[in-house]
Structure formats: C-alpha cells, structure tokens
Length: 401
Image (tube, rainbow, N blue to C red; front, side):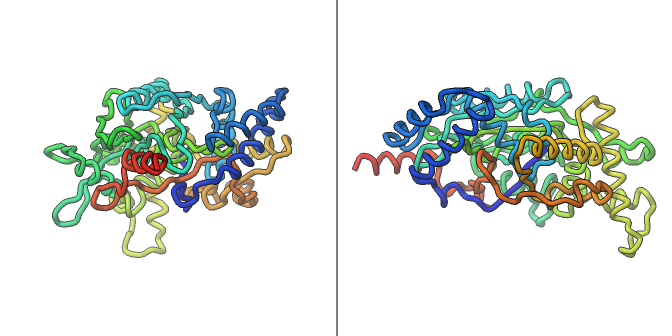
C-alpha cells in the first residue's frame, strides 16, 4: 500500500546530536525489549560514545531490519500494516555508486514482482551524513511511473502528475519517444554524494503491466487503459533511532482504489470518469444522477477483474478493512497504540460500509521509526537547486576550515 506526502522536511529540521542520542536510546530499548535480547545497557553505551565522536552511529544489520519493519508498522497512512513483520529488508548500505544503486533497484523489482504474487520489499542504501544530508537519492517518487508529455497547447499526454519529473528528465538529456504515448516509462534519475544526477533507463523486462478490461462491458477494452503491477515508493525517508536513510525504496502491493479511483479517476490524473460514463450510457448532464460514482465503481471492478485474470496480487477495500482491524487488535493486545491518519485509512470506494475502520479514531502522533516524505528535488523547470555532490563539497570545505 502506498504512502503519500506530509510537510516534514529533513533539510529544514536536521536533528542535533542530542536528538540523535535520545532517539537512539529509545529505539535500542524498544528493539531489545520486543526481541527479548540482553545487553541493552552495553549497546546504549557503545552508541552514545559513537554519537559523541561522529554525530551519528551505525545500526547493526538486525537493528536495521527491525527498524524498517517497525517504521511500516507505525506508518499512519498505510492500511496494509497487518503484513509488517513479513517485510523483506535488503541491507545495501555499502552500495554507494549510481551504477551499483541502479543494479540494486533492478534486483528489487525482480524480487518484489515475485511472478505477480507481489512481495513487500525495502532496499536500504547508505544513511544520511549528519548536518549534510543524503548520500544518495532517487528523484522519482516511484520506481515505475508513466511520463507526462506536455504539448505546446498546454495539454498533457500520459500522467499529468509526472509532467515536472518528465521535464526534469528531459532537462538532463533524456529523449522521449518520437510518438509520445499515454504509458511511456519514465527513466530513473539517481544521484550520489560523488556523482551528479544520472539518467538510468528502467529495465523494461522487469516491469509487469496489466491491461484493464471489464467482465461485463466489452467496450471497456477499447479505452486501452493499463497499469503497472508494482508500486515501489522511492522518495520517502526512513528514520530509525535518529538515523535517516533518504534512499530506501520500498513497496507493498496495490489496493484497487489506488489505481481505479485515484490514478484513473482523478481529474488531475488520467481523468477516465467521463469516457466510462459515456460507455455506460449514463446521464452526465446533472450531478444528482451520481454518474461519477457509478463510473468509478466500474473502473474499480475492471482493476480487480484484470489483476485477478493476470495473476497479479491485488487487494479490495473490504478485505483490506478486515485485515486492518486484525492489525489493530494485534497492536492493542501487544499494548501498543494504533497510529493512524483517518482520512488516509478510509478510501473513497465503499469504505462507509466498513463500519469498524470508518467509525473509529486513531493515535495521530507520528512516532519513530517511521517513513517521512522528502522535498521534491526538481523544480518546474527540471533543475535541482543543489545536487548532493555540491552539498557534500560545501560540507567538506566547511570542515576543512
């Protein structure tokens, strides 16, 4: 299940060494308590000493895996958290080049795709430097996205949400197809502290797509809609015990609402409600006919049908609601609060009928470990204000003097 934006900016709210130590101690106690491990006092002393000298510390492999899983467990906007313990965490902190990161991103796609039976995976690269920031970052908000091609008349072919990223890629020298389509894959833009933003073509053979059809309406196929099977979020920052990992792409699997309602239905996205309503012969002259609601339900039916037919893992709102209530019960039995953003846990198709999720409230605090939205690194003109390489060069000069 996907996460979305919030207003937290790591650049404007860099933690102090004291904050890092406090978060580290809290995290280590949680780790040792939940895992029933001895030696917390010795580990805390070791970490405090490391922070005093360097301003940060290095997680053990076991701490990193546990922290990433708890970050998902505590992510307030995700309804699929019942699966948190099954997250596959790939520790790739020692991979620091664009070529190496690109190779690991491809491996992430292959592992997570899992023959269509989508597996939840997170790949964690090098942690941020204290007071400097990321060692690596990915400009794309997801590893698989479709271009938004802006025409001279202002119209957009493809995904309007990706116009700025498409312009950014072009500004770096990427050439779009001669005949732009609605579902052209965006390249990755990856940068590190030692390499400028670099274009990387997405391995086409690792991108599974599903053509959307409807079991009752043959004409739906004529709309020529499709969507990719794997939502890998790549612009969120993992924070574990006071340490930030700005390059930590992760995925769950899709909820039908995310594709059918948001990606296909939103007026600022593929805007397919009117074409579907016309195909259904609905009266679109008045809002009180509820033609939009009818159309969006049909699109969601098409998404569920098509993914099931293709053998690709997909969740429906009712099943996911029941599983989320199972998660809530598990958390309460463990004596933990259920953190949640009500507006994100309740989707837009059929959720009012899901009384348990719809009619309860959640702890709105955002604890750490967690996943945080980072600022977009490119502007409308397609240029980053400051590359990681430039940022780290400035930091080295400051340290030298």
